[in-house]
Image 1: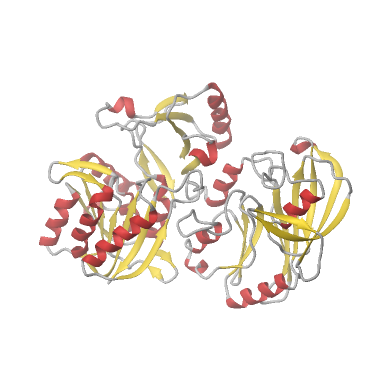
Image 2: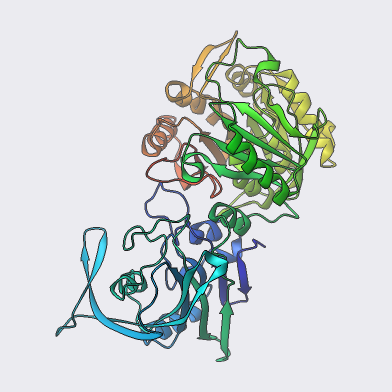
Length: 529
């Protein structure tokens, strides 16, 4: 169960949304909102419905319906203003009154809403504000204000708080004081249960003092199941091109430049808060093929050195990592949710994976996909151009108690082996392809993902059984999602095959997508006739 879940029963799912995460995806190829992420995570959540929304930067209690009964009941309660909502926010302006109620009309003006006097025919927004009247020393001397919206207009609390001359701290759109986050939190929600008629109160603690990036990770990561994920992602979290990963007991910082003293001090605090044993640093280098392993491997900065190989947890599975094997440590964290789909057999809605299938994993690397498929009962065939990585993959199988003798590990060029397997008349229920953006082999020469993906698909399709599932992925940052999907679908159609189901996924929430930094990872699951 994700740690963001406050309550669940047959009819309701109540969660504590962290700041910086949309309620739902703002566009088809944007990052998933909390609603999308939940809906595609568990089969029992496939019919979730949005009843109300919180702004991206607002945190706190939000309820989703799971049944038609709950949907009707909650919609009616919100429409009739029977649901009681309480928010708390910080302001750096001393409230002029301990209690005030503001009624006004909100009118859209570009990206903002403005408050206007009430007039005939216009919908009225009404909010009650209460202040304790004392500065909160816990929050740097700001004032804490309770807000109770009696209506449900967009940006209502934010607009009317600014109108009352107590703008919310960190609300760049309506206030003037910057902060690490917009300090507005939905602290309480009171509603009537749609089935039994009982009044229910849901609360989420206020955490304005916590790093918003850490709150997002805490909301989605189950620490007993997963201890490897991204803590800080590029521009979205760091304001730079650097990133920070939690890899079990170790932190790995990646940047284009050496660490500064300020960064080292901050990571020292991070090590303490995460109980990490050491901090490693990897310089992001574009051309690594000609460099020795010692120059591309992460370097120990502080703490106790990791062993040559160590294990991490992901969705209850174990994987071996290493800081001494070159540029990559052994697992791509941004594919965590897709590996989980192989474990659970659930992609979305009515899209489920075949039970106990034959799985072909191309460009298998250290066989992360294969491990998850095998744990779910599949018989896997992993193909890779590196003997070292295939041996690494076998160790991952053994870490998870899987018998490698029941699975195939094939060394060689993927294009060459697709032809060979076709001649052998092998068939698979699932084919997984996550090729590098660029590679080179003696058999087929240079591979460039945007140019050669169609050829790869056309060679793979004869091996895919009718109604089989094809998983296609790329991390080519400059390849637009729309163009990637068009390329994949055109290759399938030109092979005289028909797409029955399609489900697209971007990178997971701990790799946030924003206007400043669009998503780079594009993945799609396809059921093909």
